[in-house]
Every structure is written in C-alpha cells, then in structure tokens.
View 1 (tube, rainbow, N blue to C red):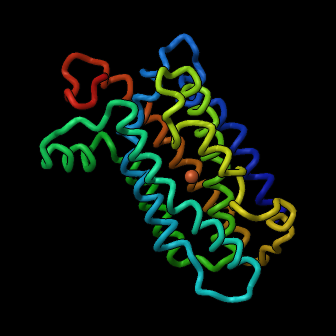
View 2 (view 1 turned 120 degrees about the horizontal axis):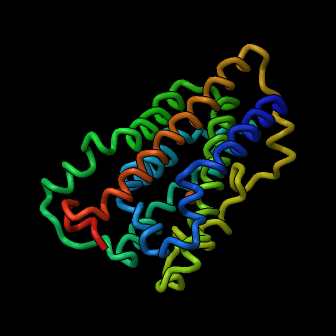
Length: 235
Ligand SMILES: [Fe+2]
C-alpha cells in the first residue's frame, strides 16, 4: 500500500495549511470563537458515528484486514457521544424549535458537511476490505489534522477541563491510523493492482470533500458572529 500512503501523506500535509486549520491554531482569536464551529460540524460527526456502526464493519472472519477494520469501527462509532457532551459544555445546547433544528441541519449552508458524510457512506457500501482500509486511513489522516488543531484551540478554552471530543482526550484515543492496529501491519497490507486507481480516487474524493467542508466551517463560524445570525448559534 506504500504508494497510497504517500498520496495520503501528500494530501495530509497540504491540508495542514487549510485556512480553517490555520484559524483553529490562531491564538489571537479567543478559543470560544474558534470552537464555535461545533454546531456546523454536527451533521458530519453524527453521520460519521453511523458510518462506523452500520457501514464500515465487515462480516466476522479471520481475514486480518477485516479484523483491523472492525476493531477501528468498534471504537470510533462511540465518539459522537463525546461531541454531544461537548456541545453542552461549549454553550450550544440551548433550546430551539424542532423545525429550526431540522432546517439548520439540512440548510443549503451545510451542504458540504452532508456531502462528506454521504460520500464516505456510499463509497464504503460497495468497497472490498482493502479499500475500506484505504478509506479509514484517509479519514484518520484528515481527522488527525483537524482534531490536533481543535485540541490546540481547546487548551485555551475556559472549560478546557470538561471538554472530551474537542480536547486531547479524543486525540489520545486516535493514532491517525486505523485504531488498534500497528502502522506496520497497515502498511504491509497488499493492495491488489486492479484496486489501485480506485484507491487513489477515494483518497482524493475524501480530501477534496474535507477541504470543502472546512471552507464551509470557516465561512459559517465567521457569519455566526454577525448580528443577523440565528440566536441559538451565538455565544
Ligand atoms: Fe474519533
């Protein structure tokens, strides 16, 4: 899989310079403002939990790739609960009308968050285990960049001791690779020749949509500070 790992690393490096990632690392901006992206990530974070629970797992078998996938899916399907917990800590669990919550989650402004979630679910449904491993590795590489920058912002937040999803606590449970597997055994997995073009397409598909999602997060986080923003999104 080395060629695919080189591509993931190339896209990961580029992603570290994304304006949203730089915004999260910008200590001139108060931490509360930086973490105010939380509500706008909701659809994706919850879809990601569902992806790990219902779409990623392989049927039980003794194939080592399936074991790596299932171990990872088992752990990562639980993390959305930390996100729900942190929404309250960050002050975003105010009451709002149910119809407003639905409009918020399915608004045009949140299209990129949904596109990333829908994309990973649709490509995973049809993927053989080797490609599922590529999907995990691409997602973990982008997730590690995003969560590292988020934990940096969280370390300056007044409620930092209470945060779980947004803090180093979450990062400590993730390695940037399939959880519970050694990097060497992931790298040693052989990717069949005929799957390589599709694997490259998946890596680009995930990173392209991640970047669009982060463009959206930055745009929405900034516009939530404007006077006409929905009151339950303001700090
Ligand atoms: Fe996670």
